[in-house]
Length: 483
Image 1 (cartoon, helix red, strand yellow):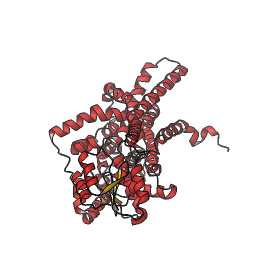
Image 2: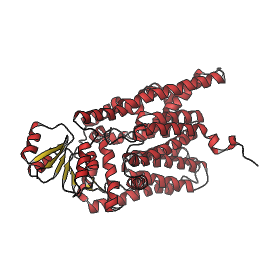
Image 3: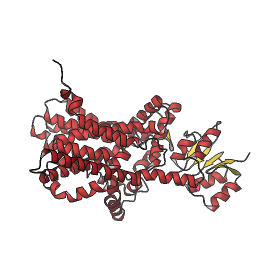
Image 4: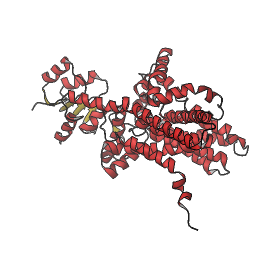
């Protein structure tokens, strides 16, 4: 029997495939940008260890902190493989996150289809594909995209376990949860959403939902991360302690209130896009009437707030903690739209329904495109303008010049991971001091470094210190010790 084209898997999923192609196009727009955009500190930081694997080996993550075992190596290995295949570049470093983000769209579609209906799944996936924060952070060199992919895979596998008699889905879900937490420890906040699936769906079969399995599901996924943390604490105890107990995060009622207010009224509207933000606010009554049905996505969309409470200042500096939640908000937005559309189009012809839906999708695309352009894309253009104003013909021209001239690997001092990435990347001779003006000034005064690259407005005192310490300017933002 010859299979008809309309019976093929690709044909049946053609609209989902088109959505993912659209998502790919949107994510390719800024993929070649240097590390000058929003969260460029993180992008350069996570790019350094894979780059240094070529010298130190795949078990020695060396970055701006030196030997850094605070992060597990899964993302590093993926970036290293991309470097090995395509060469060292910003887009190659972003490729693993981009792929993880595209897979996440497929997973969120299946999850929405499982808990709601196909209309909600399509609308939610379109919103996720075009949502400004998801577009930007899903292809940034960060942990969020990969950990979210594994988290969504864990949820889908657990739903499959609830629907089938096969234990393979139970263990698959536990494995994906383990990978999600292993990529980023704070992904443990997704566990309440997974437990909702367990108690609301799996427990319907008493044979499956026993206490031993539940304990195994919660405890076993933690073991790989705990072993890695133990390894890191054994090798670099002081650094690991500072990583988990951050002195900059003063937890108080005032700091928590401040971070929560900025989350809801500043960062979340930007990441969601204004359309989705106001849609969710206005659609609260619809969601409230279907709490049980939407319990998984409601929990997935709110448990990230625990991170804002635990790390209030770090959240303000890194306002992507809601990344996984954005996928939940996309589905909830799609659900609200589907309910409203069904109500408004009762008695309307099928042709007019399709016309209305097409217009709605165009509005979503245009509004979200504008939401991405400002501030995410303009962050790049504004940063380029700052470099040009400083006399740099291209971003990090001075740092690149140092890397080109410093063939003997003489000591270099920089202030940021992004500068380090372009100035040589190797902590054996490139030292990065983050917000440590005293160390920068003492390093210059004592002449410990052959080269200095600083990318922030110089004070008159620092300029005089460079000149008085025997440094000559070789580029707009680079100095070298006089011979």
